[in-house]
Image 1 (cartoon, one colour):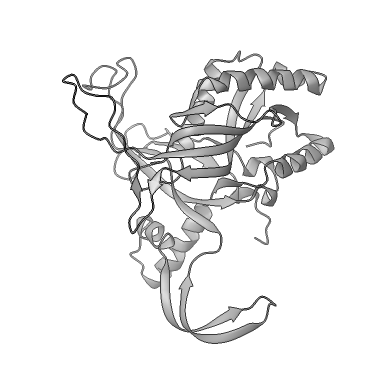
Image 2: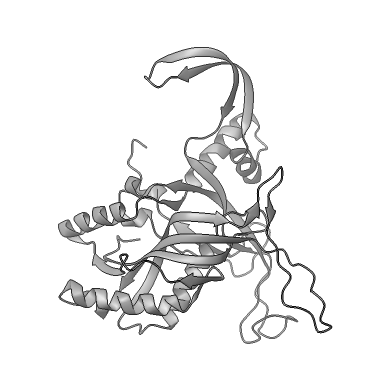
Length: 329
C-alpha cells in the first residue's frame, strides 16, 4: 500500500466498558476488528465525497481491566436485566475494560484539500462529535479533556515528516499495537529445524510461552558489563509480544441468503468461519518510522471459489509494520 497522505486524529478518547475478550483464546484488549468496525460505521455517517476512510491505528494511553486480581484473574460480572419472571438472568461472561485511547485514521477526500488548517480542523471536530455518540468496541465514549482537540493533518512531503514527528510526540506516553507475522514465521522455522513436524499452531503457542531454564547464562549489569552466572533464567523473544486475533478463515463456501436458520442478516450470503490468530507487539509511538507502520486495514483473500482444507477464503486484517522495518532490524 502507498504511504498515507492525510490523517484524522481523535485524541484521548475515554471509553468505558469496552469488550476485553478479543477472541475465544485471548483477552486484555479489544480486537483490532472492533476498531475497523468503528471506522466502517463512522464512514456510513460521513459524506464519502468529503471524507473516505481507509485504515486505522490505535494508541492506548491508559487501561483498567475490570477484574479481581488474585491467584486467578476473574472478571467483574453483573446480572442485568432481569428476566420476565422478575428473577435475575444467568450470567453471560463478559470481560470489560476502561480505556483512554487515541484513534488515528487514514483519510482522503475534499475535506483534506481545504487550503487552511483551521478548515480541516473544523471537519475533524465534526467527525469527533459524531464519534462521541457512537460505540467503540461495545463501549460508551465519555467526554474527554478540552485541551486535546481533534486534527486533520497532511503528512505528505517534507512538511509531512515534521507533522508525523509531532504526532508521535503527541501520542506519548502510550503504546500502539502492530502486527508481527514475521516473528511468528521465523520462530516456526527455528522450531522446524529441531522438529520437522512442528506446525504454526505449535509455534504460536511456544512463542507466547514463558520458558524457564536452569544453568549457566550471560547476565548484563546496569553498566553494560557481561558476566556468566548459573541459575534460573527465562528465554523469550525481545519486545512486548502478545497473541492477537486478526480475522476469520472460512470453513465452508458461502450459503445463499436466507438459507441458514437464525442468521442475523437474511439478505446477505452466509459463511461459517473460525478465528485466525497471529502475534502482535506493543510499541511506543516514538519508535515508528512511518505512518504506514501504525495503520491496520482490511486485507481479505477471497480468491478460492470452492474452499477446501488447503485453500479457504480469508477475512482478515493486516498491518505493514514488518514490511517497513529497516534492513538491519
